[in-house]
Amino acid sequence: MAQAVLAKTEYAYDPRTRLTIVLCLSSLSVFISDVRWLLGIFAAAFLLTLLFKGKILFAVKQFKWLLPMFVMLCFAQSLFGAAEGVLLQLGSLKLLSIYGIRQAALFSLRIVIVVLSATILLPESSRRMIQALSQMHCPYELAFMVTTAVRFMSVIREEFSNSLHAVQMRGADLKHIPMDKRMKVYTYILLPVMSSTLFRARQLSISLDLRGFRRSKERSSYFRLKMSAKDWMIIILALAITVACLLIYFL
Amino acid sequence: MQKENVKNFIELRNVCFAYPNASFSLENIDLNIKARGITLLCGPNGSGKSTICKLITGILQPTSGTLRIDGENALQMTLAQRGRKIGFLFQNPAQQIFAPEVSEELAFIPRLLGMPENEIEARSNELLQFFGLQKHKNSPTFFLSRGEKQRLAMAGILFMRPPFLILDEPTTGLDEENRQKLADLLHKLLEQGTGILLISHDEPFAAQFPDAEIITIKDGRIAN
Ligand SMILES: Nc1ncnc2c1ncn2[C@@H]1O[C@H](COP(=O)(O)OP(=O)(O)OP(=O)(O)O)[C@@H](O)[C@H]1O
Ligand SMILES: [Mg+2]
Image (cartoon, rainbow over all chains, first blue to last red; front, side, top):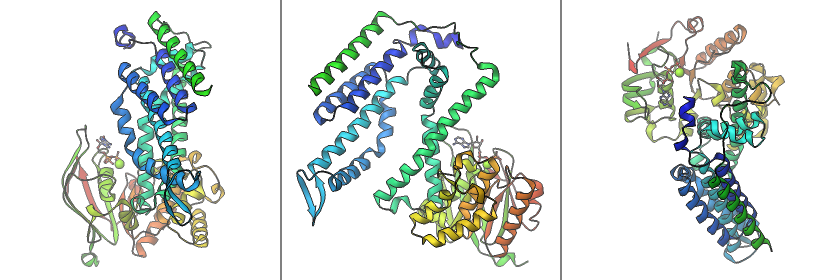
């Protein structure tokens, strides 16, 4: 089994290379708040996801709720945001404004970029991810939790839908209540779901320890990841482009 | 007794269902469950008991067949509409507790539905008292013990006083005292006219309901 995991040909890039790309793309999308720039970053993220065989289809499946969220954000930002380019007004209420649409677009684009680029990590086995993180001197437990949390994405989705079913079975009709109340329900149940999943990941790590899976002090692994020249080049290039983009944008 | 006159609350006709990418399937399930009294759904592990509950409550959709609840076509009812008629205790209470705090688990839904605050307070206190959870009122739900979660989930579904209950293994994790309390509560609810569909591998517990109607399921088929 272990040998199969290590088979060289399956893994064209070091996990750290993938991590760097994801970090670059997500920090760019967080720091930059210009729709045109973000569109460019989105295009780059799309190409890189293709190149690194990320799971674009997986990402697309996560985006079902994006349109309703975008619409809701448009109205919310228009109502409470700056009175810039008001398109639709009812008395003193700004129902829809250019400002609101722009803010909603920014937010949605960011989410799309982060989720899409995160799928670049998916082709990696969790074994290699943990190894990469601990070679970067990330504590083993943390590395384990992070990678398990990524694997736990489907668990999170499952638990989230369980909670949604439970809420509805108790008589709350999510299909027929106003959007803001529905959003409130979603955000309300999301947090416990996330924290319980992290907690379970931690318990899993403890139970593995109990079964003797524990490193003595320094976890000695006979398998170490080595970066190739190609990996170094990609990492340096990615960091350089990111820094350049940020400099151009902020100066 | 006068069982014959009681109308059916839940009716399944030729219901079929299969999980995607799995071998298990339910085939041509016909069931009549009375609006009053208690029905016991028995069968070995993996025979499809929980799956039937999820089909009735709308968490899963049958691939074919018809399902009526309280005389209405249930396939056109939302989860919430079914939930107002049926309180459903999941087999694993951790899957149904959604709130971060014990008191919130009870109050969140009625508040969303606009129930007056003093009514919420009164019902919450009564249920927490009954289920011995008063001292955990402000505790995080996540760290409750198995049996405490079971009781909290039960309190949650009783809050809106549904006319029918589906209880999937309600005694799991309960100590002797709490099992007895639950049995007494179910007897009281039955007297008040609530209908119950009970799934339980806990034979001494099930034996406390000698006039229960018994339905046995095996490998996804009704066996009696
Ligand atoms: N989400 C799912 N996907 C695929 N198969 C499933 C899923 N849920 C349950 N099953 C399968 O369906 C079968 C019936 O499951 P179910 O939970 O209904 O059994 P049960 O009668 O409630 O068993 P138990 O007594 O253990 O609670 C099992 O073989 C199970 O593996
Ligand atoms: Mg079951």
